Picture (cartoon, rainbow, N blue to C red):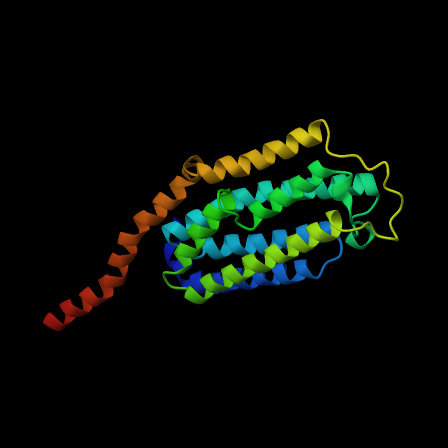
Length: 246
């Protein structure tokens, strides 16, 4: 953006549309999956669409939100995929049709997935809540329809993750599942890693300024471009006036 401001300004609207379509596409595909890892993977695609949409606004709130969303989604998807792999290691599958009822054997695992899912869809007090709020503020300047679509995408992502949570951890166990009596809960480094990831999301949501400061240089450079772009747009009109005077 600092190197090619004119080019970024020309492709801003197409990139916003591309990001919004990608976010919606990933969210809709996530809802229809039966494999826990595929749900998380398509959710990740949707999150990257949200990031692109925020960055393509080319204003300070939108870019800040996009950058913060990029950082938070890494932590959230890392935690969710870690839990999915732990389920696979214990149950031998991540097919949600063969799971169910894991909350009785692994309450820590269940709680971790629920908290990470809530954070991933922007639960108040987490990093994603701040990131989505900033991104939508940036979209409201010129792309109100995309801002409304982002709210819809967030709702669909919430449905996808809650559906995965319900099928995997709640209800009775599947009749087709193998015997899970030896299914173990989070322990050792798994438990500590999950707690650290959830604590990062919570602390970052309550105190987002240090994370925003990491990418403050990009936002500052963008703000400095605004006067230059205004002068560039005004220059041709000024030249025409001089020609008329001559």
